[in-house]
Length: 118
Length: 115
Image 1 (tube, chains in turn brown, cyan):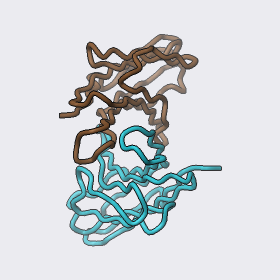
Image 2: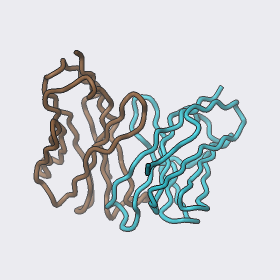
Image 3: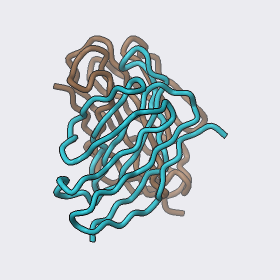
Image 4: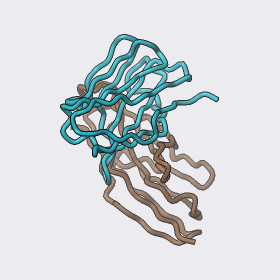
């Protein structure tokens, strides 16, 4: 069955530290998509990245980078030089192309709460 | 500005009452979704609609109902049959088409509290 595990419930760092948020997934499908969303205290989920199962290239966007490794079914997210504004809950999610009663819909992990202290 | 709006932001309900949560989008997206979020939990899918006049149950549809009469609107009714409705409700939309390939964008959410 499809599943997303974010083992880190809460992480606390001091500003300017680097931090990595872990995401491990399970899927039956060969075609799938992985996502990261940010949920600040206001509550709205903000889309950060989408990656398909055929593209294992790492991606960098400013201070954010993502490491996708199919061999370990992981899609980890690193924030470099963290800032107080990065404080939020971060969700990893999986979407399968071919399986599941809710075909193509998102399966979310439980989220990692990141606190960045000044 | 294009986006997704949800209203109200906060909603209080007495036990036994039905309430309707509004979700509107002007992104011209075909697909719309409703999720429920409980404290310390991820999001769980309630209902989704890939096209106007059609919708499907998600993983936790019991006690909820929806309609999709217009492309831009997907209201969610929380009925009295929902035993534990206090939660944060998020609406999302996506371009639609080939299932599982597009990105969902979320509204600001409605926080429902049962008194």
